[in-house]
Image (cartoon, rainbow, N blue to C red; front, side, top):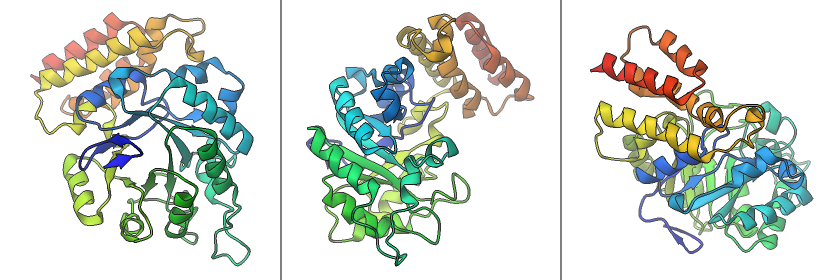
Length: 337
């Protein structure tokens, strides 16, 4: 499977772009364990154009994680175009346009999945060829030389399941791949992802770009089933990666190996995430890396066997030094043996 000239192999697995989750340490580990493509945290186009330091910091990538994509979101056409040009200078392998984020602070302002709300003509059935979503896509594709891809959802709600009509129109805009999350915006992350329309898009003979499926993939068995049942070109994994970057690997890891990996993630983030983070303006770079790692540790399934883990989890989320957090992880290691 290829996106443009990027060869990603057969049945590749992707790490989804996620705010406050897909930082550089986590991406590098996911890549090591088999993720064919990783993405940065999604980036606000308007904040990039305004040169907000905490946003610009998210553009930092490493050659060790390639191929890597940077995803941008926004509601203004010119800001999205300008942001894409800025992102191109950061040197990713592709630029992804976020038309799928459902959270209120994004979609509620008309960005992300908010782009799906008003794309139909007055007949209520036909997508407006001049919809802002399509205008942004065309303009960004024309503005940069990197491959441009899109991530979106089935539609705004179950009365407006627009993806089968929208996919060929996005392809006509010049994108090189399309990722579809199997929920509507109104579903947020509730209920079950519906892959039937993803499969329908993939089976459309007019579609010649890769189709990447996303939603409720919790294991490699789930990914295999999605490939077999729906014929997608790649599978993207999101929330199930929290605290387990090894989810992409078919190798069975020991408990000790998993805790070693979590400790390594902490060290990478402390080393690589600098004090430009807005949350660390008055704090140390060490704490900045810890802030980026604690949620992974607290969410990791590794610790499910610990009795009364809630208290230990609270300690993890309150730890402010590397030594303190390592001590907690070593305490957990002993409890689980």
